[in-house]
View 1 (cartoon, rainbow, N blue to C red):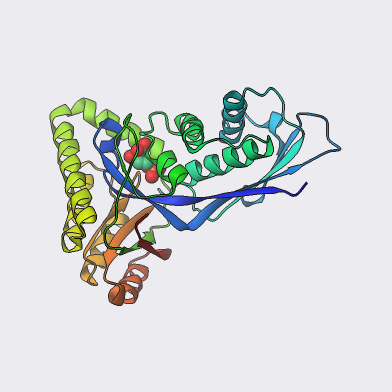
View 2 (cartoon, rainbow, N blue to C red; view 1 turned 180 degrees about the vertical axis):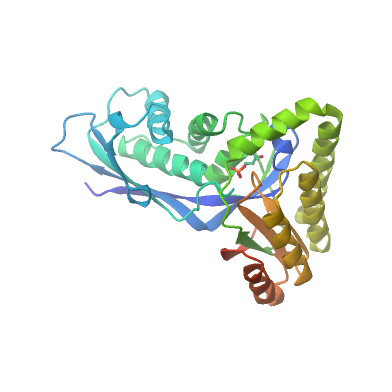
Length: 315
Ligand code: PMV
Protein backbone atom coordinates (compact mmCIF):
# COMPACT_ATOMS: atom_id res chain seq x y z
CA UNK A 1 0.00 0.00 0.00
CA UNK A 2 1.50 3.38 -0.97
CA UNK A 3 1.96 6.11 1.65
CA UNK A 4 -0.91 8.55 2.09
CA UNK A 5 0.51 12.05 1.80
CA UNK A 6 -1.44 15.15 2.77
CA UNK A 7 -0.27 18.71 3.08
CA UNK A 8 -1.83 21.87 4.48
CA UNK A 9 -0.91 25.52 3.94
CA UNK A 10 0.15 28.14 6.43
CA UNK A 11 -2.04 31.18 7.04
CA UNK A 12 -1.92 34.93 7.44
CA UNK A 13 -4.23 36.98 9.60
CA UNK A 14 -5.04 40.00 7.48
CA UNK A 15 -6.86 41.95 10.19
CA UNK A 16 -8.42 41.32 13.59
CA UNK A 17 -5.95 39.20 15.58
CA UNK A 18 -6.36 39.23 19.37
CA UNK A 19 -9.69 41.08 19.20
CA UNK A 20 -11.04 37.91 17.55
CA UNK A 21 -10.44 36.02 20.81
CA UNK A 22 -12.99 38.39 22.43
CA UNK A 23 -15.69 37.99 19.78
CA UNK A 24 -14.67 40.62 17.20
CA UNK A 25 -14.50 39.49 13.57
CA UNK A 26 -11.21 38.83 11.77
CA UNK A 27 -10.06 38.04 8.24
CA UNK A 28 -7.48 35.38 7.40
CA UNK A 29 -6.11 33.97 4.16
CA UNK A 30 -4.25 30.74 3.40
CA UNK A 31 -0.51 31.08 2.75
CA UNK A 32 0.12 28.46 0.07
CA UNK A 33 3.88 29.11 -0.21
CA UNK A 34 4.63 27.36 3.08
CA UNK A 35 3.17 23.97 3.99
CA UNK A 36 3.06 21.22 6.61
CA UNK A 37 3.12 17.66 5.25
CA UNK A 38 2.02 14.41 6.89
CA UNK A 39 2.59 11.01 5.33
CA UNK A 40 1.26 7.74 6.69
CA UNK A 41 2.79 4.43 5.65
CA UNK A 42 1.51 1.05 6.90
CA UNK A 43 3.88 -0.95 9.03
CA UNK A 44 2.65 -4.54 8.52
CA UNK A 45 5.42 -6.16 10.58
CA UNK A 46 4.78 -4.03 13.69
CA UNK A 47 2.26 -5.03 16.39
CA UNK A 48 -1.33 -3.85 15.79
CA UNK A 49 -1.90 -0.30 16.99
CA UNK A 50 1.79 0.64 17.04
CA UNK A 51 2.38 4.15 15.69
CA UNK A 52 5.88 5.35 14.92
CA UNK A 53 6.41 9.12 14.61
CA UNK A 54 9.22 10.55 12.47
CA UNK A 55 9.64 14.33 12.46
CA UNK A 56 13.18 14.93 11.15
CA UNK A 57 12.82 18.76 11.26
CA UNK A 58 12.69 18.58 15.06
CA UNK A 59 14.89 15.45 15.35
CA UNK A 60 11.97 13.38 16.66
CA UNK A 61 11.85 9.62 16.11
CA UNK A 62 9.65 7.87 18.68
CA UNK A 63 6.69 5.65 19.28
CA UNK A 64 3.49 7.62 19.84
CA UNK A 65 3.11 5.95 23.23
CA UNK A 66 6.44 7.51 24.31
CA UNK A 67 5.25 11.07 23.61
CA UNK A 68 3.76 13.15 26.43
CA UNK A 69 -0.04 13.02 26.62
CA UNK A 70 -0.31 16.75 25.82
CA UNK A 71 1.76 16.43 22.63
CA UNK A 72 -0.18 17.94 19.70
CA UNK A 73 0.47 14.75 17.67
CA UNK A 74 -1.04 12.59 20.42
CA UNK A 75 -4.07 14.88 20.65
CA UNK A 76 -4.55 14.99 16.87
CA UNK A 77 -4.48 11.18 16.58
CA UNK A 78 -6.81 10.80 19.56
CA UNK A 79 -9.19 13.29 17.93
CA UNK A 80 -9.29 11.08 14.82
CA UNK A 81 -9.97 7.97 16.94
CA UNK A 82 -12.81 9.78 18.72
CA UNK A 83 -14.33 11.14 15.51
CA UNK A 84 -14.19 7.75 13.76
CA UNK A 85 -14.98 5.77 16.93
CA UNK A 86 -11.94 3.55 16.38
CA UNK A 87 -9.90 1.99 19.22
CA UNK A 88 -6.82 0.92 17.24
CA UNK A 89 -5.40 1.61 13.81
CA UNK A 90 -3.32 -0.93 11.92
CA UNK A 91 0.35 -0.17 12.71
CA UNK A 92 1.76 2.79 10.78
CA UNK A 93 4.58 5.29 10.56
CA UNK A 94 3.62 8.98 10.50
CA UNK A 95 6.26 11.23 8.98
CA UNK A 96 5.95 14.98 9.48
CA UNK A 97 7.80 17.75 7.68
CA UNK A 98 7.04 21.44 7.36
CA UNK A 99 8.30 24.59 5.70
CA UNK A 100 6.19 26.78 8.02
CA UNK A 101 8.40 28.54 10.57
CA UNK A 102 7.24 27.69 14.09
CA UNK A 103 6.11 30.31 16.63
CA UNK A 104 5.92 33.03 14.00
CA UNK A 105 2.20 33.57 13.44
CA UNK A 106 1.96 31.59 10.19
CA UNK A 107 -0.21 28.77 11.52
CA UNK A 108 2.42 26.04 11.86
CA UNK A 109 0.61 24.13 14.63
CA UNK A 110 -2.82 24.25 12.98
CA UNK A 111 -1.41 23.23 9.59
CA UNK A 112 0.38 20.23 11.11
CA UNK A 113 -2.79 19.23 12.96
CA UNK A 114 -4.92 19.47 9.82
CA UNK A 115 -2.42 17.45 7.75
CA UNK A 116 -2.14 14.72 10.44
CA UNK A 117 -5.91 14.46 10.91
CA UNK A 118 -6.57 14.20 7.17
CA UNK A 119 -3.75 11.69 6.57
CA UNK A 120 -4.59 9.41 9.51
CA UNK A 121 -8.34 9.41 8.83
CA UNK A 122 -7.68 8.62 5.14
CA UNK A 123 -5.36 5.79 6.22
CA UNK A 124 -8.20 4.42 8.38
CA UNK A 125 -10.32 4.37 5.20
CA UNK A 126 -12.70 7.09 6.43
CA UNK A 127 -11.40 10.48 5.36
CA UNK A 128 -12.96 13.07 7.66
CA UNK A 129 -15.10 15.91 6.27
CA UNK A 130 -13.83 19.49 6.40
CA UNK A 131 -16.16 20.18 9.30
CA UNK A 132 -14.83 17.20 11.26
CA UNK A 133 -11.21 18.09 10.43
CA UNK A 134 -11.75 21.69 11.54
CA UNK A 135 -13.22 20.75 14.90
CA UNK A 136 -10.58 18.05 15.55
CA UNK A 137 -7.81 20.58 14.73
CA UNK A 138 -9.47 23.05 17.11
CA UNK A 139 -9.05 20.49 19.90
CA UNK A 140 -5.31 20.43 19.19
CA UNK A 141 -5.18 24.24 19.14
CA UNK A 142 -6.92 24.35 22.51
CA UNK A 143 -4.18 22.25 24.08
CA UNK A 144 -1.51 24.42 22.47
CA UNK A 145 -2.96 27.88 23.02
CA UNK A 146 -5.52 27.67 25.83
CA UNK A 147 -8.20 29.97 24.39
CA UNK A 148 -7.80 29.95 20.62
CA UNK A 149 -10.44 31.78 18.61
CA UNK A 150 -10.47 28.97 16.04
CA UNK A 151 -9.43 31.18 13.11
CA UNK A 152 -6.21 29.27 12.33
CA UNK A 153 -7.75 25.80 12.07
CA UNK A 154 -10.67 27.24 10.08
CA UNK A 155 -8.69 29.07 7.37
CA UNK A 156 -6.23 26.18 7.06
CA UNK A 157 -8.93 23.50 6.83
CA UNK A 158 -10.97 25.34 4.21
CA UNK A 159 -7.98 26.90 2.37
CA UNK A 160 -9.95 29.97 1.36
CA UNK A 161 -9.98 33.59 2.49
CA UNK A 162 -12.34 33.70 5.48
CA UNK A 163 -14.31 36.27 7.41
CA UNK A 164 -14.37 34.68 10.82
CA UNK A 165 -16.23 35.33 14.02
CA UNK A 166 -15.82 33.04 16.97
CA UNK A 167 -18.66 30.53 17.33
CA UNK A 168 -20.33 31.57 14.06
CA UNK A 169 -20.54 29.66 10.78
CA UNK A 170 -17.64 30.18 8.41
CA UNK A 171 -18.05 32.90 5.78
CA UNK A 172 -15.85 32.63 2.70
CA UNK A 173 -14.60 36.08 1.73
CA UNK A 174 -15.11 37.04 -1.91
CA UNK A 175 -11.93 38.73 -3.18
CA UNK A 176 -13.04 40.92 -6.10
CA UNK A 177 -9.57 41.95 -7.25
CA UNK A 178 -6.41 40.03 -6.32
CA UNK A 179 -3.79 41.88 -4.30
CA UNK A 180 -0.18 41.28 -3.29
CA UNK A 181 1.24 40.99 0.21
CA UNK A 182 4.85 40.69 1.28
CA UNK A 183 5.40 38.59 4.40
CA UNK A 184 8.54 39.57 6.28
CA UNK A 185 9.87 37.41 9.10
CA UNK A 186 11.45 39.28 12.02
CA UNK A 187 13.31 36.06 12.93
CA UNK A 188 12.07 36.44 16.50
CA UNK A 189 9.96 33.57 17.76
CA UNK A 190 7.06 34.36 20.00
CA UNK A 191 4.56 32.01 21.63
CA UNK A 192 1.00 33.02 20.85
CA UNK A 193 -0.26 31.53 24.12
CA UNK A 194 2.03 33.86 26.13
CA UNK A 195 0.96 36.99 24.23
CA UNK A 196 -2.73 36.03 24.37
CA UNK A 197 -2.41 35.50 28.16
CA UNK A 198 -0.74 38.93 28.50
CA UNK A 199 -3.57 40.59 26.61
CA UNK A 200 -6.05 38.84 28.92
CA UNK A 201 -4.23 40.24 31.98
CA UNK A 202 -4.06 43.74 30.49
CA UNK A 203 -7.74 43.62 29.64
CA UNK A 204 -8.61 42.62 33.20
CA UNK A 205 -6.55 45.56 34.49
CA UNK A 206 -7.91 48.12 31.99
CA UNK A 207 -11.25 46.79 30.72
CA UNK A 208 -12.51 50.07 29.20
CA UNK A 209 -9.33 50.65 27.18
CA UNK A 210 -9.23 47.10 25.85
CA UNK A 211 -12.94 46.88 25.04
CA UNK A 212 -12.54 50.09 23.03
CA UNK A 213 -9.50 48.67 21.20
CA UNK A 214 -11.37 45.45 20.36
CA UNK A 215 -14.33 47.47 19.12
CA UNK A 216 -12.13 49.69 16.93
CA UNK A 217 -10.39 46.64 15.49
CA UNK A 218 -13.79 45.08 14.79
CA UNK A 219 -14.80 48.21 12.84
CA UNK A 220 -11.53 48.09 10.87
CA UNK A 221 -12.23 44.44 10.01
CA UNK A 222 -15.74 45.27 8.77
CA UNK A 223 -14.34 48.04 6.56
CA UNK A 224 -11.61 45.71 5.29
CA UNK A 225 -14.22 43.14 4.33
CA UNK A 226 -16.12 45.77 2.37
CA UNK A 227 -13.10 47.06 0.43
CA UNK A 228 -11.96 43.52 -0.46
CA UNK A 229 -15.43 42.43 -1.56
CA UNK A 230 -15.97 45.62 -3.56
CA UNK A 231 -12.46 45.72 -5.01
CA UNK A 232 -11.71 49.19 -3.55
CA UNK A 233 -8.13 48.24 -2.86
CA UNK A 234 -6.96 51.86 -2.65
CA UNK A 235 -8.36 51.86 0.91
CA UNK A 236 -6.88 48.53 2.01
CA UNK A 237 -3.39 49.78 2.88
CA UNK A 238 -4.68 52.40 5.32
CA UNK A 239 -6.88 49.83 7.03
CA UNK A 240 -3.91 47.50 7.56
CA UNK A 241 -1.85 50.35 9.00
CA UNK A 242 -4.73 51.42 11.27
CA UNK A 243 -4.96 47.86 12.56
CA UNK A 244 -1.22 47.88 13.29
CA UNK A 245 -1.58 51.10 15.29
CA UNK A 246 -4.37 49.52 17.36
CA UNK A 247 -2.19 46.43 17.96
CA UNK A 248 0.63 48.72 19.10
CA UNK A 249 -1.76 50.28 21.62
CA UNK A 250 -2.59 46.75 22.75
CA UNK A 251 1.19 46.31 23.41
CA UNK A 252 1.55 43.26 21.13
CA UNK A 253 3.97 44.87 18.67
CA UNK A 254 7.71 45.17 19.31
CA UNK A 255 10.54 47.49 18.21
CA UNK A 256 11.63 44.94 15.58
CA UNK A 257 8.13 44.59 14.12
CA UNK A 258 7.64 48.38 14.14
CA UNK A 259 10.95 48.80 12.35
CA UNK A 260 9.84 46.42 9.58
CA UNK A 261 6.45 48.14 9.26
CA UNK A 262 8.11 51.58 8.99
CA UNK A 263 10.68 50.33 6.46
CA UNK A 264 7.92 48.88 4.27
CA UNK A 265 5.91 52.11 4.35
CA UNK A 266 8.95 54.27 3.65
CA UNK A 267 9.77 52.08 0.64
CA UNK A 268 6.29 52.67 -0.80
CA UNK A 269 4.11 49.89 0.66
CA UNK A 270 0.44 50.91 0.73
CA UNK A 271 0.01 49.67 4.30
CA UNK A 272 1.65 47.29 6.75
CA UNK A 273 1.00 45.56 10.05
CA UNK A 274 2.12 42.72 12.26
CA UNK A 275 0.28 39.46 11.58
CA UNK A 276 -0.61 36.82 14.19
CA UNK A 277 0.15 36.83 17.89
CA UNK A 278 2.83 39.56 17.68
CA UNK A 279 5.90 40.45 19.80
CA UNK A 280 7.81 38.55 17.09
CA UNK A 281 6.96 36.56 13.99
CA UNK A 282 5.91 38.26 10.79
CA UNK A 283 4.63 41.50 9.39
CA UNK A 284 2.61 41.82 6.18
CA UNK A 285 2.84 44.71 3.73
CA UNK A 286 0.45 45.53 0.88
CA UNK A 287 2.40 46.45 -2.25
CA UNK A 288 1.89 47.33 -5.88
CA UNK A 289 3.49 44.43 -7.82
CA UNK A 290 5.87 46.84 -9.56
CA UNK A 291 7.14 48.03 -6.18
CA UNK A 292 7.53 44.62 -4.63
CA UNK A 293 11.29 44.30 -5.17
CA UNK A 294 12.02 47.73 -3.68
CA UNK A 295 9.95 46.98 -0.58
CA UNK A 296 11.50 43.51 -0.26
CA UNK A 297 15.00 45.03 -0.34
CA UNK A 298 14.00 47.62 2.30
CA UNK A 299 12.58 44.91 4.57
CA UNK A 300 15.75 42.81 4.33
CA UNK A 301 17.81 45.93 5.00
CA UNK A 302 15.66 46.63 8.10
CA UNK A 303 16.42 43.18 9.54
CA UNK A 304 13.90 40.76 8.03
CA UNK A 305 15.38 37.26 7.84
CA UNK A 306 13.18 36.35 4.88
CA UNK A 307 10.50 37.95 2.73
CA UNK A 308 7.80 35.94 0.93
CA UNK A 309 5.56 37.20 -1.80
CA UNK A 310 1.95 36.16 -1.21
CA UNK A 311 -0.70 36.97 -3.81
CA UNK A 312 -4.24 36.92 -2.36
CA UNK A 313 -6.78 35.73 -4.86
CA UNK A 314 -10.43 34.84 -4.80
CA UNK A 315 -12.04 31.43 -4.52
O1 PMV B 1 -1.25 31.65 15.86
P1 PMV B 1 -1.03 33.10 15.64
O2 PMV B 1 0.20 33.65 16.20
O3 PMV B 1 -1.34 33.51 14.24
O4 PMV B 1 -2.18 33.85 16.51
C1 PMV B 1 -3.50 33.65 16.27
C2 PMV B 1 -4.22 34.90 16.40
C3 PMV B 1 -4.68 35.33 17.78
O5 PMV B 1 -5.82 36.15 17.54
C4 PMV B 1 -3.61 36.15 18.48
C5 PMV B 1 -5.08 34.16 18.68
C6 PMV B 1 -6.35 33.45 18.26
O6 PMV B 1 -6.58 32.38 18.80
O7 PMV B 1 -7.10 33.95 17.41
